[in-house]
Structure formats: structure tokens, C-alpha cells
Image (cartoon, rainbow, N blue to C red; front, side):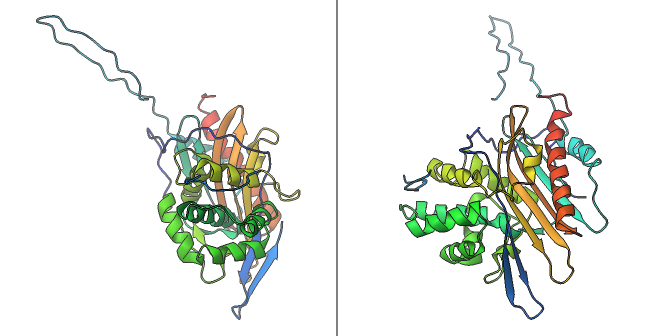
Length: 322
């Protein structure tokens, strides 16, 4: 198993960014029939971020030397914690049905440490809607313009209600897969490829890439300006009732913002179930991405994703660091 190694390393720093609201997002189902017919079932920024309305390094010991004396400085080593191993340990309690597959990536926002479990690429289903809106906001930023009223209307229903017609409209506005891929190159995603033609829900991605995208949405070190980040976070915090599951299962109460995706494959009848977002657990903020496929039912996939989300944050709590 190719895990994302994190022993003794820190991810690119992500500063705390406040959530505008408490909520979750959803997903949509996008598939292809045997004849190639697309079917879609809905379900449930200022130069750098233009949205017109949006609802140490450790100090080393110093020494001065007198004549004839030589200063000596002992290096200070930071503690090394194998977060991947801790996550793997936590995942032992997660039931993964035969034929199903799950991949997890998690970042402790405060410490900058991350961990990963599992590998491979997955269909995005509707979690790609976060990526589509991020790409649109980046294009608006580059053009030094605000989103139009129509674009904002599409963005709202696409994220809050997971409306697929709105997603298709914005998919076209960003230039479909080519536009998404160009934006993702700037965002730092290396394992994500936009879906063919109109099939945005069949974009391929990895849990590690989704974690990178979450850092663009929720972190200060981002291609997106603060207004754009706030806007996107706000939409992810106003999700329709009934679509509020996934990584939120790991959070304290309603202290989360997310986007979910679920997709039944016509050839197998098996389900892709994904969830990405930010959660607060015991006063600590985490970015979490969980991707899965091969689930026999939607309910089974949701249970898997929620259990994996809890395991992701446990990888930081089990070490005794609170």
C-alpha cells in the first residue's frame, strides 16, 4: 500500500481560517449508460478574490564566546510522530466490505502535520463542485472582475443544493476539463484529471489532491484571495438538510463545512461515496478528505466514509497531543 508518508514532516502551513457558517455539502450522481447517454440525478477575490457579495522554526540556543573559547550550539530536534502509522492503526477499527476501497488524507491545521491512508484514484462525483467553483473564482480573479449575478446564482445552488444543471453551466464557463486542469495545476493538484465532455462527475482524483484543494479553500497560503475563500467556505457552510453527512461525523456538533459526493455506477450497481471538508474536534481544526468506491449500497458507503473520518482525526488524538 502506497501511503502518503508523514513521519517527521509537515505539510505546507495552513493558518486557521474561520468558518462562516456551520454546515455541510452534498453531491450528485453522474453516470453513463451503456449507450453513452449521460444521466444526472441531483441529491442530495479585490485583485485576489473578487466576489461582489459574500454573504518556527525552533530557536536554537545561542552562545557568545570570549577569547580562546569556541561557541557550541547543539541542534534541537523536533519530535517525530509517525502519523501514517497512527492513522493505519485507527483504520483497523473501520469495516471495509469486500470489494470496497477507501483512501484518507488529513491535515491538522494548527500543527501543519498530515497523514494518509490508502492509494489510487477515484471518481469525484459531486465533490468536484468545490473544484469547479474554485476554478471559476480563480478565473474571475485573473480577469480582475466580480462574479456575475448569474454565476453567483449557479454557485449557490451548485454547492448548497448540489444542483447538477448549475454545475454543468459553470463547468462550461471554466472551459470544462481543460479549464479545471489548468486551475488545478496552479492549485498544486497533481493527480486529478477532469472528466470527459460534460461528465464533470467522472473527474478522477486522489485523497491527497483533495486535501491540497482544501488547503486552497481554507488556508491563507492559497492562489485564491481571502474574499474568494470566504465565499466558498460560506457556501460549504449552508448545505441543504438531508445532505449533512460524511466528514462531519468526526466534528464537535455542528462545527464543520463540507462537500459530499455519491454516484452509483451503472455497470456494477456499486456506489462511489466521497466526503471532503473541515471539522473541529476538541478545539482543533482538521481538513479531511475521504474517498471510497465499490460500496454495495449508498448507506454502506456513508457509514464507511464517516468511520474513516473519525479515524482520521483519531490519528492525532491517539498520540496524546491535544
